[in-house]
Length: 244
Image (cartoon, rainbow, N blue to C red):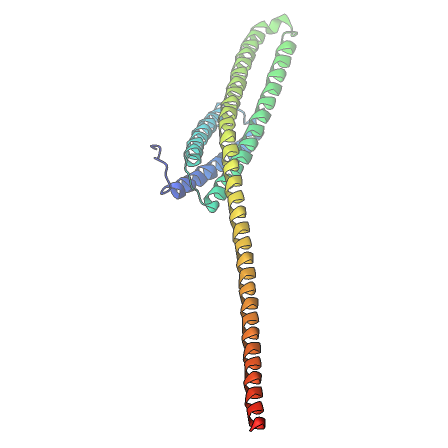
């Protein structure tokens, strides 16, 4: 799939694709957690390791796509709070799944080393048998030697896979840190904005109450002036009547 030219218009599509890839990664993790139990048992055969190979390949491909999507989203400026929170949640889900995947790989590697140890023990025991069984011993040693070599190669592939996954997650980790700082800045900006609005509303309320008090004082002064003026007029009229 061709990488998108990330902008504000396709962030939603990118988040949907990221969620879809993470869902597919989850299925791969569940599958490897189920198959790992077959290592070192009678079900441990070439078909099992072909399945492991397919899972490793698909996992790295999906993880690489998630890395590109997260990288693209991290370059977008002006993400909404919902988009920022959704991106962080998906990154956390991805990180948890990779931790489970890595744990499963380590357990497979441990089981493989146990198989190698048992194979070497069986080889040492077969070398102590009678001379009459020399041909069968040599054939068995050859099979054991091939098996040990194949197991060691499988462990090497598992370790290489874990290193590759760790490198990709390290890069995603840097993006998570940057995105987290962006979210903190967004939330701080929202907090400051809300605080400023609250302070502004409080100031407006105080100003309105001050205007109302001033208006009341003016009305009281006017009423007092009217009363005094009326009393003065009545006094003058009364004095004139008495003088006549």
